[in-house]
Image 1 (tube, rainbow over the protein chains, first blue to last red):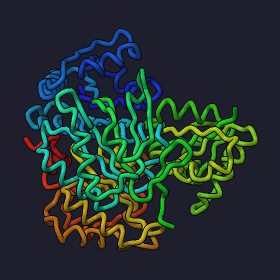
Image 2: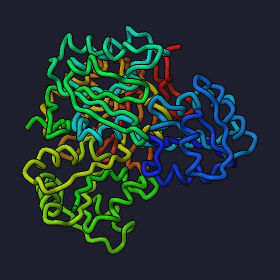
Image 3: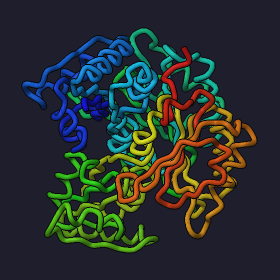
Length: 241
Length: 241
C-alpha cells in the first residue's frame, strides 16, 4: 500500500535526522514540502523527485500529498523540526477522512525547543511550556492569556515564531506581558538559525530580551525562577532539593 | 581534547537515534548511563565499553563521567528521550564548574512528548506544557499549581512520570485537579513503552484517564478545548480559524 509519511526533519542538517526519517525519505518516490525545507534536504537525497511549494500553501500541500498517496505513490511530506509541533501532522489528519485510501505514518523529529536548548545548555531541565507568538491563526488575546498562565505557573517558557517581518514587535509585547509578573533579571536565552548557516545563541536577561533582535528563525527561552546561569550557559535544575 | 557527550538517545530503538547521537556514541571510548538504557543500546554498539549504574545514582554517574572526561577519555553519558528534558544535561552542567578540564557537548534526542504524540496522531499541534508528576524532587503543591495554570491557559498538557510503584495514585490525583476546570469529555491519550517491546497507545476521555493504568513507562496527553478525535487518533488543530 502506498503511504504518506509526515516527517519531522529537525533543523535541516544531516546530523539531526533520525534513522527513521532518513529511511522514510529514501523510501518515498517524492519528497514534498515548503521550498526552504526541501532545498535543505535536496543535497542529502540527490536524485530524489521533489515537489516544493511556497509559504501559506500548507493545506494545498497536504491535499497534494494525500492525493498522491491515494493514487498509489509513496510520499514524504517534510516539516522543519517535529512533524507534530506546529507541523503538518495535524492538518494532514484533519483532511485524511477525505482520502481513505492513504495510509499515514507520523515520524517525529527534533523540534527547536530541544535543539535550541542543547545549544544554550539545559534550560528545559524542569517543567516547561511551548507557545507560538504567531497570531496568524490564533487571536493575540489567547497568546497573552497563555503567557500569563505560564508565568504564574513558574514554567520555563519556550517561544516559537517570536517575530517576523510583518510583526516585528511581538517579542517585545510578549516580554511586557511576562514582566508584569517576572523579574527583569530572569535568565533567558535566544537560539538563531539552529543547525544552519549563521547558527548563534545568547544568554541574556528578560529585560535585555525585550529589546533583542529576533526573526522567524529564532527560538526564545524564558527561564523559571529556578533557572540560572552556569558559565556562559543557561540551566534549570531538575529539582527543588 | 577529551569530551563528555550528554546524549539524548530517544526511546532506545535504533530507528529513533539521530545521526549525531550515533556518531557520538561511536566516538566515545565508554558509554555510561542507567542500566535499562545501556542495555537497550548494547546490541546497537557491540564491543563498546559500558559503565551502567542503577536508578537514583544520577549525580554519581555525572561525576564519574566528568572525571573520565577530565582524565582524557571520551565519554557518552546517555539519557532516555532528550538530554535536556528532565535529563542529565542539567546536573552535568551544574557539576561542570568542578571539572574545568572536561569539554561538554549536549546532543538532543526525541523526548516522549514527541514520540508519544506521533503514535497518537497530532496532539501537540498547538501550544502545550510538559509537566512531570514525580514529587521526588518537586513538592506536590508546585505540581498541582502548574496543572491548574496549564488548564486555565487551555494548553495541551503532556504528563511525564504519571505513576510508579511508590506513587500509583499520582495520575488520578492530577486528573482530579484538572477536572476542577476541564470537562470530563476532554480528549486525552496514553502512550506506553514507546519504541520498545509492548508499545501501545490509546485515545480516551479525561474521565476515563482518571481510572486508567499507567506506570513509569507511560506518557499522558490531556487535550485543550480544541483537541478532538480524528478516526482512532487525537489531534489539536494548528489554529482557531
